[in-house]
Length: 256
Image (cartoon, rainbow, N blue to C red; front, side, top):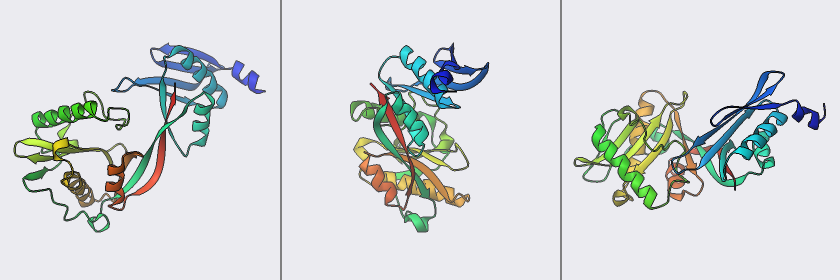
């Protein structure tokens, strides 16, 4: 079957708002979906069995959706990145995927104490009201400063603030920094480290990271993962300074 015949054999069905299926002989051979990010960016994803299904889905979705459109792909997945590039997408930014050791002997974070007047509250011990206040303050600082486009993908507009996933830094009765830990697979993932602007450059992020990694090491986890935007020099220095190694990278691609 030549490429033209292959494309012609694939039928596209718009099954629901933001969802498409590619069908071949009544069998689903591809799925396309959209997702809206906090800053309004529209992300698309396609999972297809072969090039013809991907191309037909992309053609239908791009014809129906407004610009700009964004997508994420593992940089090592050359087939997927090539498919998106064939649809007209170009690289906007890169995220490094780090493997982070937890052993204090490897990280050097054993004695990483918070600055005077600041204490670290363990996972599960944060109170919800000051945690929400800190979350709102950090989001306001992001919106007023660098903006959302380079923030981690999982930073949601109204997250479910589960205190069991957060370690926090407290100054008196006010929370000034947080670290969120997620167990998305068997490998724990450091989803977010954030410190109030007026408390930055005091070693709070390092103390939060030391606390989290020590807690993981205590329960037998040898490593965690973290994603860092390539342009975030401070976060890159923090993780590489404790012996984290780059394990891969993801690309955000855009069609304008």
